[in-house]
Image 1 (cartoon, rainbow, N blue to C red):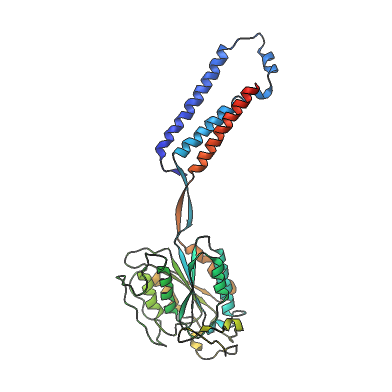
Image 2: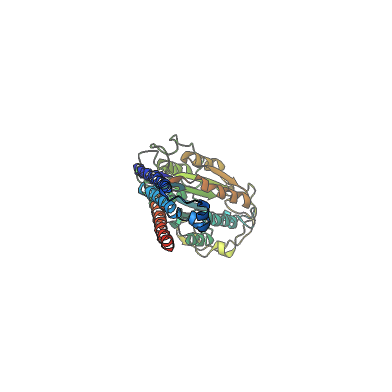
Length: 376
């Protein structure tokens, strides 16, 4: 506990002075009292409670003075809480490969369950947003503290073709920029890094990481983070490395999760996971029929995570890379993520507690003094 106005604690000196004066007065009264031949007879005649109850009002009054003196100094306590403006953007891969059944019942079902638990376990006040990406990236839920809205969005995720990891990163940056004025939106010159490029489909994403250190030129990171989960490799649009540099220039950390085994099996999604309005490869929403299950087909090279690229994205931005090959591992990864959120010490003034306590003690002292003196 600390005090905003510690000099006010000088008032506490009044308490020992008053206590000393009270004890001195008691001693003086004893000396001036009429001496009886048998003091024991007087003591036996007095009720037992009269021997101590006369001191109770004084004790309560002195204690009330301590409370009021502490209130005058404006006490406060510190506790660690998530930064009030912390936002976590979950960027979730909903490409067709998430239908792979190498993780039972399929990758998407397990990812949805883990994300669902992650949202529920976050401290109150932490804002979470959701970006879903396949052939293009879409901000489904802007950063919010409404957990029901977030879980509803997660439950409604459907799959589509394509995997745009870089575009999802940029979409997440813009979602953070909308609620944090310290983060510039994508397309704004922040004076660091290299302007992003947009390689065509099939362009390798395993490019050389930029030399700019994590956190950009100003050092440090904003409290907001991006958690990007994918089971494949980038298929189109801006490369994840270039998008990561955009995040690093804005001091936004990206935590990447590579999900799935190295031996994907048949892809089977439920009709709900396929959806009637899935993401199509050309952007917007389109029909999702014609993929009820079966063996791995076109685009198999994108069914295994691009671990080198995901590691580079995390390293460039100051985040971390995690790998999960089953449900338990993925839940473990999500369980560790909240520890990465920056905390701040929040000072909460508790003057009112001491003030009310002191006032109540003073009132009790007065009431007991009047009652007992009258009854005596």
